[in-house]
Length: 154
Length: 154
Picture 1 (cartoon, chains in turn yellow, brown):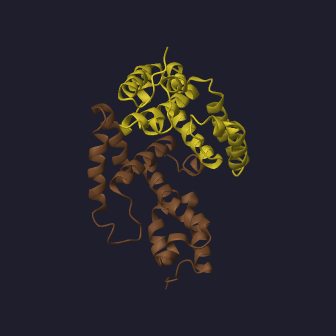
Picture 2 (cartoon, each protein chain N blue to C red):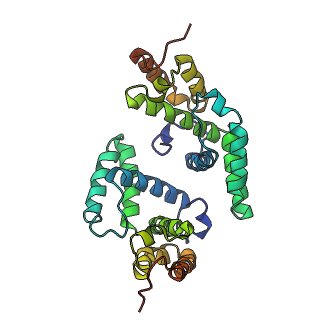
Picture 3 (cartoon, chains in turn purple, cyan):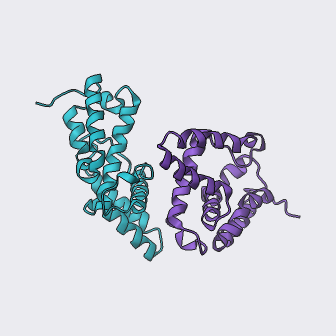
């Protein structure tokens, strides 16, 4: 996904480092156990579980490599550099694309997610990958029109 | 895996392009259906199925992007550049690492694979990632000692 959307990266984002970050992030998430984005209870302690997983996994490697890959993961988590912000935006976008492409609202409908919840979840895309923000708004409008998410915007 | 083993890449191999190749290769393999490496019958027509899948998938993208990613996949398949040969070596190595780490011979034992078959399968590592070849020989020796693969070397 990062390879395909590389041309939408904002200035200053290094797209190959984005790929690295997303791969490393997934490994930690697999180890810590992924949680459904809108499940508030399941997300309690998520950061601590992932940090513990990162601590364990990266330290399986020799010191210099452990440090380099851990630094990349820390950069992703801190979400401050253009590279990390673009990577985080793509991570959010993936959930939207999957639910949009599912045609039946996927996990949004399954768990009764509202329009406002989706937009809040996608907010990092507006700043991290502004060129892709219109795509988000279109997909959310489609989801509302299909009744995949409830329209709770006031 | 490519990120972790980047330091073993031979001169001339671009490790970020290796990551790209392996990701693209997996997408095509998922679409075409992966086949067990030692299943001769299942591997008949594999190249044709994968080429058809690549044709379909990459052409879902806009022309310039389709061309660029397809070129990367073609480079991997041609297995001629140092980058492609290192990528192919890692692709082979992954199967060995998984079966070695399984502790019970994994799919080697399950399908009665012999030592000679494993070594033939791993041969691209000797040329594509020579620094990793000793690891292969050690793992194969371990597999023979444990009886995970039959010792058919004359």
